[in-house]
Image (cartoon, rainbow, N blue to C red; front, side, top):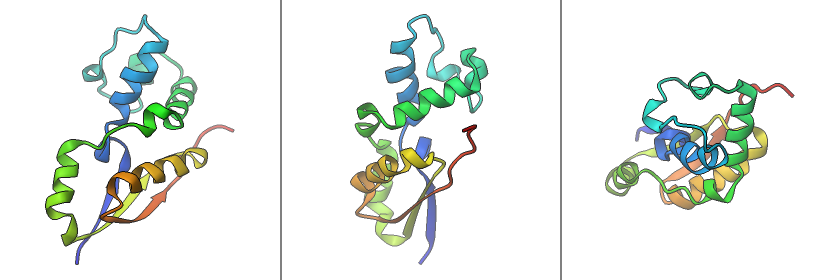
Length: 127
């Protein structure tokens, strides 16, 4: 049986779009950048903000009720429903340590019928 390792953010869900549209732009109404305008990751230069500010905002979103309510990407969920039983599934995330429990909970709530393992590699952040 094959094992598939899935990246949680922006593969199983639409984290960047949700963060931009539901968290960043409402707090920064002067921002005219749309999701489709983001051509680099991290997108701090496109947003004309400091990298630390971007990470603080993204990590705040990760802990928010908005992130908890993110829906899985429909096409991925459909794939799991059709083929998920044919493989072992592991989910990997680059979530900071303090946000990993929320990321794991979201993962198992939406994909727990198939996923048996959640792992994270904390990103490098100053402090």
